[in-house]
Length: 302
Image 1 (cartoon, one colour):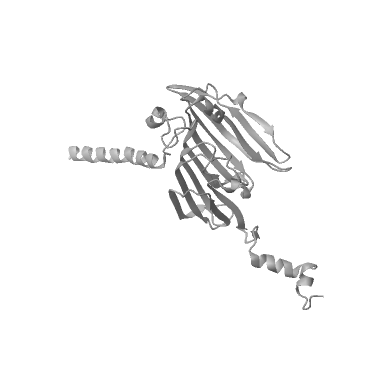
Image 2: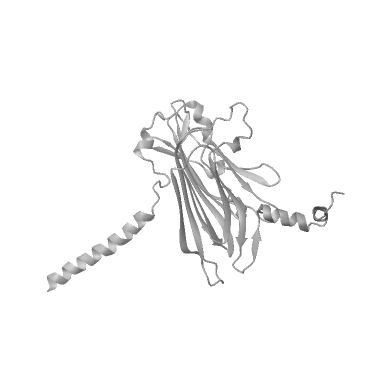
């Protein structure tokens, strides 16, 4: 009898300890910061573009809404790894992160970390080597240069951007001046924020997943949680974008990217704001305008 009880207890303990481990492994991101894959370490030439001086090994952005100090904020988590294949690629080691501000509020860049990997040696970016510069009246940037860059270095950095501006869920550039092996954009958007989403460029998505998650966003004081639209867009083996082609207009019109435009916002208190307008809305505004509308409603030309 005692032996049977010990056997049962042993099985329960095994289940107890293995269950949380399995949950943790499911939630763990495939590329933890600071850890490299053997395939990344061993890469010498990017076979899909043998002329490339640098290549993005992995790039991921996670965008979501969060209540911080009783305010709804847009949060963006960013993580990237870049392999330097020749001295010409050293320019990829100088990074700038722009952020927006006005008289009353600002975006914040948080938890900025950077590592230069050289074999088994890691050189960490020191906080006093991160600078803030003014770009214009409304824009600033965080800038830094990776330390100890060599041919074969892997440059890795991550940061979090916290924004009070919901229009700054402005999308994702899959294509850049250097090729990318994997570029991934994730977003979780509460249903009361409605965005127009446009895919631009010539390259197709390798992953295009859109699902709905129930009860995903809650604000204290309101009884009903919101559903969320969960987006996952991935492109792989993206060629570098050549900005020197003849007869090209703005390069931004041709790069492969996802663009977001805030269309409507429905507040939890029942109010709504519409930011982008249909042709029907424009027509109504013209006809009710005291000057233009008066002309449009005339039956005769003169």
